[in-house]
Amino acid sequence: MVGSALIAIFKKDISLAYRQLAELMQPLMFFILVITLFPLAVGPSPDTLQRIGGGIIWVAAILSLLLGMERMFRDDYADGTLEQYILSPTPLYLIVVVKVLAHWLMHIVPLFLISPLLALFLNLTMDMYVALMLTLLLGTPLISFVGAIGVALTVGLQKGGVLLALLLIPIFIPLLIFATSAIESASMLLPYHQQLATIASLLLISVALSPMAVAYSLRVSQN
Amino acid sequence: MSVLLAHNISCEKSDRALFSGLHLSVSPGELVYLTGENGAGKTSLLRILVGLGMPSKNTFDDVDNEQDPIDLNDDEHETSLKNQKTYVKINTIDVHKDINGASEQLLYFGHKLGLNQLMSPVENLQSWCHQQNIETNIGTITSTLDELGLTGLEDIALKNLSAGQQRRVALAKLWLKSYANLWVLDEPFTALDVNFIAMLEDKITAFLKSGGAVLMTSHQSLNIDYPMTNMHLEYQW
Image (cartoon, rainbow over all chains, first blue to last red; front, side, top):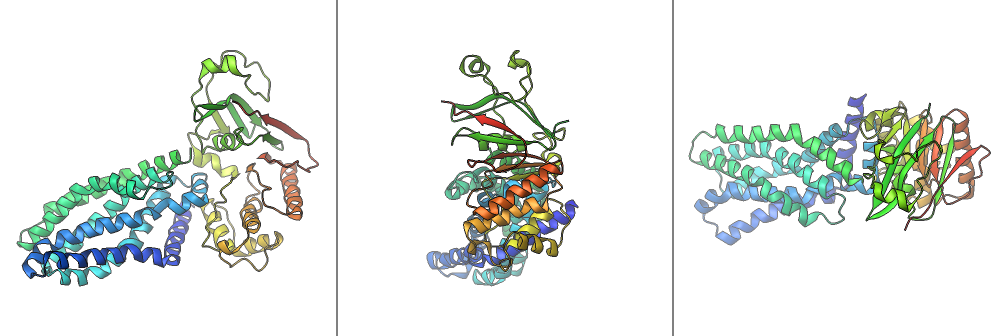
C-alpha cells in the first residue's frame, strides 16, 4: 500500500517535470553556457582546457543543479499538496526519498546526455571522462539529498533562491575536492578508487540521514 | 469515546496569544462549529488539531490574569494548568507523535486546496487517493465529478478552471473519503455558489448521520438540520 502510494508520487513528479519542460531545460542551458564561457575566457589552448576541464564541469554542474533545486518542494508547498502528504498514511521521509530521486532523475539525466560533448569540447582524455562520469554519478545524488535539506529549510520563505545557494555551496566543497582530485588522478593514469569510495560513503550517509532532516524541516515549515 | 480529544492547547503568533489552555472533544456524530473574527485563530487551531501546527508551550503566568481558558466540557480544569499535559488525540492516536497513523481516519480541508494547477481534476484526485491509500478507480472519480457538476471538465488542466470550480474539485475529496470518521473543514463554503453550498450541507448532514464527526469553521451561517455545538474564539489583544 505504501509502495503503490510512493510509485504514484514518483510518476506524478516525473510527469509534472515533463509538463514544465522549459523550466527543466533552464539549468541544462545554464550548464552548457557556463562551460562555453571558459574556453573563451582562458583561451582555447588544449592543454589548459584539459587541466581545468574536470573542475569546470563540476563547478558548472553544482551551480546548475542549485538552480533547479528550488523546484523540489516549491510547488507542493505553495498549492498545499505538502499538507496532504504530511496528513497521509505514508511516512513523510519515504515521500521525500521518492521526490528527491525523481528530481535527481529529471535534472541529472540531461546533464549526463550532454556531457560527452562537453568533455570533447574541453579536450578531456577518455580516462578523465570515465572518472568524470563516475564522480557525477555518485556525487550528484549527494547534491540532491543534501540540497533537499536546504530547500526544505527555505521553502517557507518566499524568496529562497540566493539564500539557498549561500547555504549549500560551502557544504559541497568537500565533494568538489574529492571529485576533481579523482579526475586529476585519472588524467595522470593513477587509480582514483579512494576518492570514489569517499564520495560513495558520503552519498550513503546522506541517503540514510537527510530524508529525516528534510521531513522534519518540511513539518516545521507548516507551523 | 471521542474522535478528537485536545487537551490544554495554546497558540501564540508573533507574541500574541491566540488562545491558551483550550480543551476540546468531538464525539462521533457531533458537529462542532467554530466561529470567530478574522485573526482569532480558527485556522491555527484547526492546523494544531490535525497535527500540522505545533501548540505553543503554555505561558502559565499569563493564563491566570488575562483570560479564562475556553472550555467546552466545562469540567474542573481551573486547577493549576501547570500540571496538565498538552496533547491532541485523534482516535486515541497522538497526532504530534504519529501523524501518519492519526491521519488515516481524518480528512483535512484547508485554505490551500492541495491540487496541482498543471494536472487535470481526475489526475489530481487520483494521485490524492493513491497518497491516502484510498481504493478507487477512474470511474468512481469521474462519476463523483459529474455529481459535483464538473461534467466535461475532467481532463482540463486545473489552472483553466474558475476558483469555484477548483474548490469543487478539492471538495470531491469529501465524497471520496466519506469512510473517514473525522472531517476538519476550514471555511469550506468560500467561493461556492448557492446550489453547491446546499449540496455540501446535505453531504455534511449525511456524513454526520452516518456517525462521522465534523469540525468546521465558516463565516456563513450554516443551514443544517442537525444539532451543532457552537464554539466561539474571541479575538485576543
